[in-house]
Image (cartoon, rainbow, N blue to C red; front, top):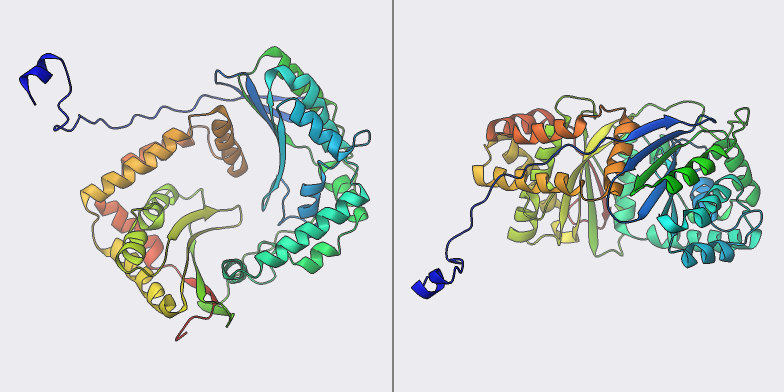
Length: 441
């Protein structure tokens, strides 16, 4: 660095700047209250921009109903009109006011989400209440959406990745388990308007939701949301025939390898599932970080070996998924038919290596920094913070769980990473589903 540059106070770019560990604070607390009709309102007044998001969430999803295809179409049909407005009019009101709405269904949840500007809540929040309580389910819209969803379902099931996922779920849960059920074009095409009406009456109208509200909340926003939520009435005597009578036990199949053969496919989709400890287990978070090191980011073990070194696949991922019924590690990728067996061998090699060889300090530091950055990013927005709260609520986790995750990450060492992998990965059954035309398998 020249003397002139020093005199002018310019930085020496040949010297790395100092770094410091990322310090992540606990998320701000939410506020809870129970409204006059029994609906729980969970709110977070956080952020500077005058926007808000409302999530009306029911603890019932695709695995809880007898006809998941009807719930799938109900998701698409809720915004297609109310008793007084057509679907186009509903869409125009939201668009004119800078708001947008979406409906989502998960395994054990159904949620209606509305993003809006604070200044327009009195125009759009009452409409949200009408959509939830009095959807019209117009026949012409149902015909159009049913045909579209059935067509997309048929196209999706032609993909080997979809077939491997379906087969993998059947192996993991048992072929008759609700989580293993498969949507087909034929089942979607058979749904009638009466099915949607009955499902809405027996499900959404009889089950009290939780309302999650986040953003820069003023008194006008709070009043509008409370008024909307309290106007919703429930028929607690409504028939529950649409619900599954009881929870079905998870019964994994005995076979560790099954193949869906598609001789026209040039690639094989791989889905390996390893049963894991539940979310409430003391080792769960540590296992999640170990799985992240194995295949959760671009520089992970699986990516470095199978993609970068061997060139067997464009990408490969590993993740830990938790449900009320169970938890499992899933490893997924697609590869040329010729390399399917080699990919399985390399996955086994990497699981064995992370369970028997201490991780290098530099790699562990990269894992810690990457995970910590992800935890910190959750605090960027009031919407991501309230989403995290929804996860805590769904698993009945304590309010300090976020800092538990931070502390578990800080406590990672090469030795306990190896020990955790040996205990929970190396010895776990490997339920492997292949879809395609794998050579030599």
